[in-house]
View 1 (cartoon, rainbow, N blue to C red):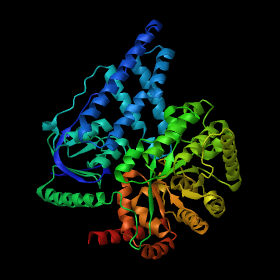
View 2: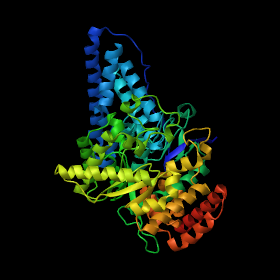
View 3: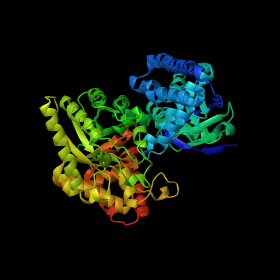
View 4: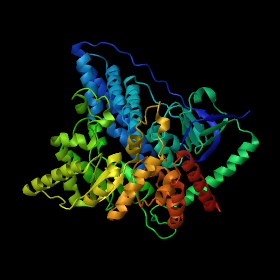
Length: 584
């Protein structure tokens, strides 16, 4: 009898094959005291485990490098960089010395601290970076325990569907190298690097299938639908026939999407739409360029601060921004100044005192930067300097008033003057824009547009602040709705302000990366999108098959309704109708 099991679909596509339950024991970390005289010996043991973990990842990378694009290998590079980061090294060594405890326990303590920092982050993409921390820590722990890593060969894995508790990017690439059909994991989320990687390499994948290893046995026939997040265990002949037909149609659709790579985004009535990507670090550009030869509409610089666990100096920032710019090969780079506070902290900011009672409303983003100019000015100098090397723009987050904007612009001008006096090369005409993510800023969008070179709507915070809710609080997250009429009115106000002032107005929040809202935003007049790399081609396909003249009238009627539920129903119907036209 067929059994349906639901999870979170993270990579679309259909896989049909036998299950392979991939199990690895993770030993419980024991704590024991070591004599002070043995601390150095324990530190050497920890460093040897770090080196071994580093060597293992390089071996995996070298083994699969022959037929794997460099942008895909960047996911392993992320873990290699984490192994080299003082966050793991210095923090764990400090714990060994401070507590005179074994390396396993000291590493575990350090990982808990890092996971706590990421868990408290509001941004869902940044929050899932804790998975990378845990993956790297587990690999080091296996090296400390001297536990050999067993990877099955082609004969065992080819055409099989992997069932596991979790998979690292390295695991995923190794399994893909062995030509698996797809995978199902018990843990993980849609924004983890493993989920993103599975989408990039085209492996159907489902995560969050709790107790999958108990529900599915080795050798059982499975169907996984990565679009619906559904596993069919022991399917009947009728189901197999139906899904094989869907599998064939999905393969044809992916070929068509891939043909859109490096093709301009232009509507049916000839309107060019700018489609850029979001990144957190220069290495992300490899992934972005695997989908499209385009620019960056949002570079979240706070990851550099978080990964360094301190405020990086001017030269460190300049080198990072320069790497990003040069990897774009002439395409534009929009750098957002650091947005620390609330959910994103470094050890340096944590040590300054207890967290505010309501951190999302407190000292964060540009507020913190202006209060601590000694930390902010090095970033301004780095951005101004790198802008002299290519097309760079600077974006200020969390502005709430024109007075605040004036203060920021004054500080920028002072920084320019200082660079000029020091005879250091910089871009005197650097374009400066603002993130519109607070209702007060959206309501004042006309005033902001008159004094800035561009605006960008940050829907994640705009929705949260407009609806007065914490979207990561399970008790109220059901109220988080981009289609709330108040939210849509603020977005429309901001778009209209940009059009009136004849400056670019983009949208870089999660809403831009959701294909469900692409036609809505086009109909509202949005001409600049900044999205996650893995949805770029799908969104471009919608743009290239949409008529702005028709959409504007349809969307205008939809927005006349004051019910989010009604708006959603009508938008879904519009999307369905347009999708049917594409098929025909």
